[in-house]
Image 1 (cartoon, rainbow, N blue to C red):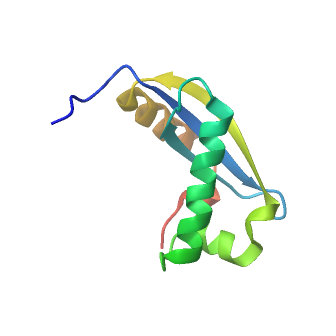
Image 2 (cartoon, rainbow, N blue to C red; image 1 turned 135 degrees about the horizontal axis):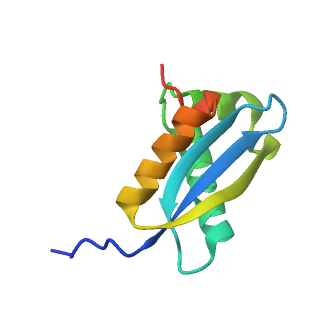
Length: 104
């Protein structure tokens, strides 16, 4: 069994729909020090899941409606450790109105 790592960098990223100005915030593990690349990889996974899975999630419904070309992905913060990343993500969710994070 693999030992859990608490020292890995995690990225808090934002996906912005430039058409309707709705956004989503999430976290993902960093691939080395390529933070922007890691966020873009996670975005591609979201796009793939929106196409292939029938999830009734706000982000995926938005992606199916508008297509992948209307989104901008940006790194909001780089955090050391998964637990801290989740904590900070929760703070962002409370502080800002991320309309695409809600589920039905």
